[in-house]
Image (cartoon, rainbow, N blue to C red):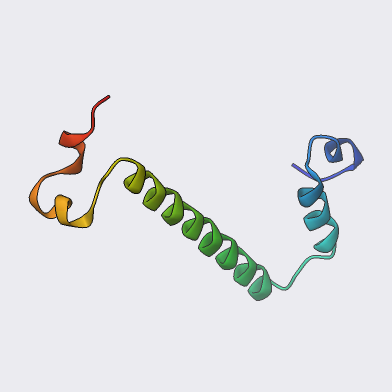
Length: 75
């Protein structure tokens, strides 16, 4: 999907700013670096969410060594 003024209404302010920032195409190598940075950021956020979930559910690494954590989760 290409960006145009009509799609701007469905995007949040940060998304529009990113599109404006990268209006001019980047060299492929720079684009790949940006992609890798975005993936690293998303992976970090996912790790943090998983850690938070484990803490909320009382799951510790030591417990995982002895017993599979799914068997201790109540639905």
